[in-house]
Length: 249
Image 1 (cartoon, helix red, strand yellow):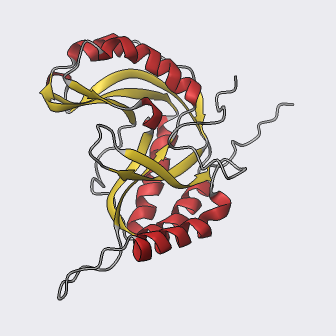
Image 2 (tube, one colour):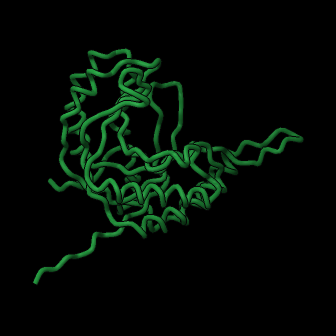
Image 3 (cartoon, rainbow, N blue to C red):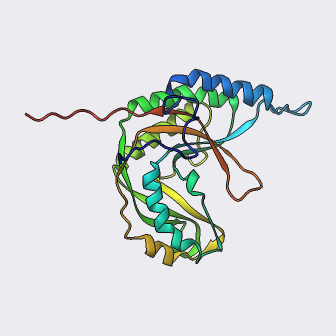
């Protein structure tokens, strides 16, 4: 099985598209955001307020690992879940690696953001990665988040994340945590109250997953509801550049 088998997860593109992304449909996606975010779902400000029309969307930019890679990690984590019911374990179908969390963004800024993300993707090559080890924020003894880390070309991934954040800032949607050191990870669980997850970090510490290739970036909308897990929708995605061809002779 190839390391980038077709994705069937939440961050996959709509089944109606014969392609794997919306790179050819950035304009369509922009128009949809303007149409749905401003007209159909628009929230008019109260009379006399300074609120601009248009719904605020909770957005982030991410990469989506292949299903086989996530299946492997999920199988490793599954035995740990039943022993820690105090944690809110994340939904396997929505697992992703965040490049930049943008927070609440209006439709106008989101439309401006799309061509900048497309340009950022064109400037960066595909990134070879693997899930490895684990950690916690802010610390294993008082964790709010339990995560799996990544190995591989972390430098290239950090440069991609920097480009994404810069593009978001220029579009008027600056990441609220801009300036914080980029720590690539996949969130496995969140803690309602600070918790000691030292044993979980130790259990996952020696893990080295199969390598995979990040080949596109997604602009994702997150909807928070009454359910345990947020709902994610990929609004658009753009392919990263193919790696340069090396020749020997």
